[in-house]
Amino acid sequence: MKFVTPYEKERIEYLVNYFIIEQRKKTGIIISEDFLVERLFLFDFTVLKETGQLTLNLEWEVLGKYKKLIVPETVSKFYKKAISNINAIDVNFDYFSEYELRLMESIIVRYYDSYDSNTIYEMDVFNKAILNKTNRIEYEYAFCNNINELLDKPIDLLSRAEERFLFMYRISEDVEKM
Image (cartoon, rainbow, N blue to C red; front, side, top):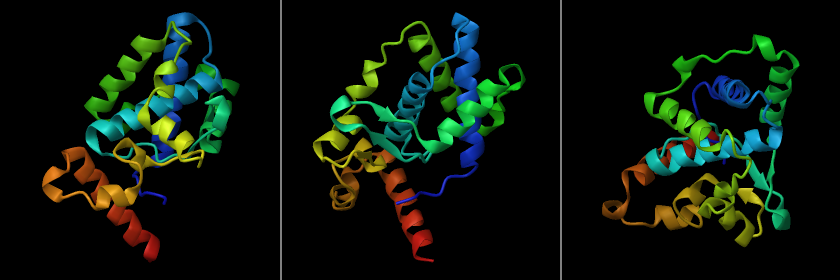
């Protein structure tokens, strides 16, 4: 299911630019597309797990037995655009909340000098895609094995993040029916 997220393309583009700019500032090296995708994935699912808010709305997939993220087409397009004119890229921070800005900075601090992003491969959401043999990482994996499991959970047992996610899920479901 495709969710509805405001300013989706702008947020993805500025986040791609942010990680390229910051990695280059800290190391003098342009981040590879693979490592960029790992940071975007970490950002996307951390925000979702902690807040229930969908941020990037990308179609995440894993290359099965290799445990490698497939680069979403949108990310690849923005990455190529950014590195083709690296000195002209910018970031509009108005598209991000204070919480998201802190998370972006913490990801840079944690991973700028390390190309060991194994943290993402240990995340439940990543492993659920492999175990379910779908290779597609669904957003509900942040909370459960499938959406029905979350829909069947008693309301008084839902976390705030789960409630928010279900609200967004229902809106997207309604939009899809139109």
